[in-house]
Amino acid sequence: MTVVIGFEGSANKIGVGIIRDGEVLSNPRRTYITPPGQGFLPSDTARHHRGVILTVLKEALEEAGIKPDDIDCVAYTKGPGMGAPLVTVALVARTVAQLWAKPLLGVNHCIGHIEMGRLITQANNPTVLYVSGGNTQVIAYSERRYRIFGETIDIAVGNCLDRFARVIKISNDPSPGYNIEQMAKRGKQYVELPYTVKGMDVSFSGILSYIEVTFTSKMLTSDQCTAEDLCFSLQETLFSMLVEITERAMAHCGSQEVLIVGGVGCNIRLQEMMGVMCKERGAKLFATDERFCIDNGAMIAQAGWEMFRSGQVTELSDSWITQRYRTDEVEVTWRD
Amino acid sequence: MAVDGRSVATQQFLKKTDQIKQGAEARVYRGIFLGKPTIFKERFPKLYRHPLLDEKLTHRRTVQEVRSLLRCRKAGISVPAVYFVDHSCHCIFLEDIVGSITVREYIASTQLTPQKNQEESLDQLAKKIGLVLAKMHEEDVVHGDLTTSNMLLKAGVETGEADLFLIDFGLSYISALPEDKGVDMYVLEKAFLSTHPNTEALFDKLLKAYASSYRKSHGVINKLNEVRLRGRKRSMVG
Image 1 (spheres, each protein chain N blue to C red):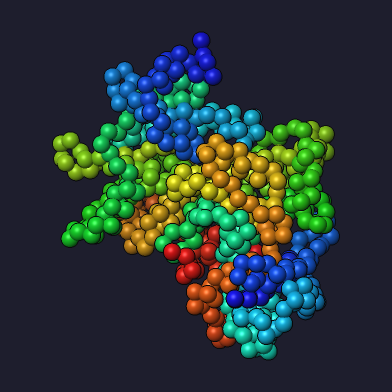
Image 2: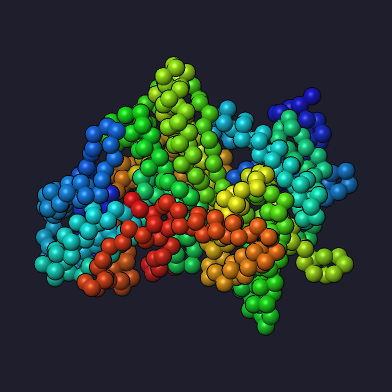
């Protein structure tokens, strides 16, 4: 039996999860929430994480009924992410690894999402759509790497949603994306927005600029459409682009499985649209709920578990963090 | 009288075809049209998309594909001939490039069976792709979906040397902007390197050939480098 504890804190979530041979023993987390119209700054986010991380760690150990002696390895998010929050988490992971005399493992955040998704859904070899506040990628496994077939060429889809929420002053509690999703359900009118797909890549910055310039100044003020209509139209447009590039990657790779991971992957409308596409192709859709879609410690523990079992460890001298860490930089030693 | 939005001619033709592929854009069939081997590309409604968005995209992409194919053909770039367009069902009848294989298949098979002149033949191919793309961009055609699956190789009748055909212009458009051409090359680079791992040197040769034969390539290469580093592209912050 191999038990791994994972620390995640690359953005505004701080989580500690414990995995034992594919079983999630505990997975508590906290979210740093800012007032409407504001994003989260790295220094403030790090301060929040520092304030709660030991409480979350204690919760994780108690909920799992595990003592430090039972743990085989300490995994933490090495990157990508925001510098200051990553440093906070790495510092705690390093400290407990030394206190408990356990090996340390730096994990790629994106690969954490993928491995957690594969564990929970039992997807075999899916085309992965990874959508979050900081990342938008279409990924498929090939020759010991998670290859990026498509991605955003500017901002991530979650970032686009978050910034849109700021523009029209939608609450950040529990998250901007969730609130947009609820408002979109009340939207009736489809408003045409820029649609930018480049092969298997997408671009979202144009939509955002268009909304900032056109809609806030003209449409909302002149009653041409409601905020709900805008939320609805934005979701329909963004998600159509995502489903399209996923389908293009599936056709390219000859894949019959799709796995959606990342915070935006919780969105029911995105899952619905992807489901329709998969049905049309005779393919299978796999998705997880908010426990595992949204950044969490268990996903880092699971990726760490896979890495540790394949003989990987991170030396203390190499236990730095990086904001820049491509998914395809990691050699996947635990898969054929 | 049209059934399911298809004209009678299209219906008749479809009865004698075999579906060979369902891409992200369309269903692709193979058959004979007016005595010629034909590829039939049908853009069907995408039910996951909002109907207004779907209709707009489908119409625009059908028109753009035909427009770009004709423009390339006029410029002497090897692309399939357009035989017929049925706008009622967004269908295009195209020349079937009989006896061709995709560049993707060619690279994969060449890498699998190492021969004495393997490197040389792949270098020649990279050069050829670079030259064809330079010519296409010279005509201000941006392909929009450059992958090695969207390039065909067919042995030339006279020379015996392979001709390179570009296909699948559904995401194409006309633009003179270096930014758009740079993104076009970026899309190819990523598709190239993810589909054919460890071929960085090959792609560099492709770029060199492109740069040497396209006089405005400097701006495009600069934009390509910019796109490589832009925003979340390399840093993936967050």
